[in-house]
Each structure stands twice: as structure tokens, then as C-alpha cells.
Image (cartoon, rainbow, N blue to C red):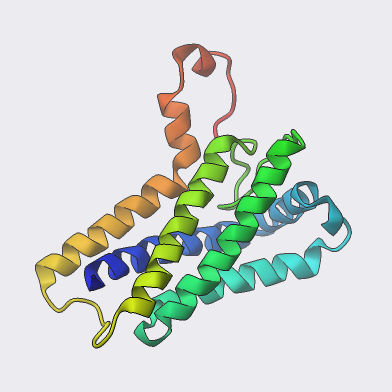
Length: 187
């Protein structure tokens, strides 16, 4: 079971890392995140500054906790809490028919769509499963010592993270040809 936990750690850790880096990579990215947050959560209008700092700080804490074997359980737990909140926010925006990009990974991205909610539900499932697995695991929970298994585990985590982070680009590439010819900008 440790290799599955490690795959989840790497997967979620990289997704949260990309999220943090995307939001803080420059003033424009951070401002875009704050502006999007005000539209995604109307109750935050005028108060996005402190909440943005908390979100980025919490996401950074998830990355750190998942990277350290002794704190992986806390990383999965905090990740699950954040993902539940993010999923709720995106679902609310869809319900209100809000046309705004979530800036989940920094840049503009596509307007919030069902695929973003489903992506977060999938990530929430991974975080929850990782948490349950960690709570049920006894004994040594360090990363596997067999290099081949670790390489496969790490590769799977990296692949899943890349697919998750590139969701908008993949959706664009797989969309109908007529959607591409309209000149819509990609995420």
C-alpha cells in the first residue's frame, strides 16, 4: 500500500506546487487570482487580500507536508479540506452561471466548467483515499526502497499531475474541430 500512498503524495504534491507557483509567479498572476476569487466567491469582494494569502499559504503547507514522511497524513488531510472548499466554490460559480476562469494554476485558463469541478472531485478522492490509507497503515510508511517500484510510483504521480494541470489544454486539443476554428483562446 505504501507505493499507492507515495503515488498520491507525489501526484497531489505536484498539483499543489503547480498551483502555488502559478499564483505567485508574478504580480499579474497573483492579481488575476485575487480578481477571480472575488468573482468566484462574491462574499469575499473587498477582502480577497488576506484570503489569497491564506489560500497560497495553505497550498504551500500541503506541498511541504506531503514531502515529509512524518507529516504526510496532515498533508492529505489539509489537501482534502482545501479541495472540498475549492470544489464547492467552483460548483457555486457554475450554479450561478459565472463566466470566470478560476486561476487555479495561475494564468487565465478557461471559464469554470464541469470538468474543473470533476477534476477537483477526483483530487479530493485521491486526498481522501491517501488519508484513509495512511490512517490504516501500520509500521514503516517511508517511500519504498526498491528503485524500480519507486521509479514507477514517481512516474505515475508525475504523469497524473501533468494531465491534471494541463486539463484545459487537453480539453482544447480534444475538442471538436469547429470549436478550434472559432479562434477561442486557450487556457
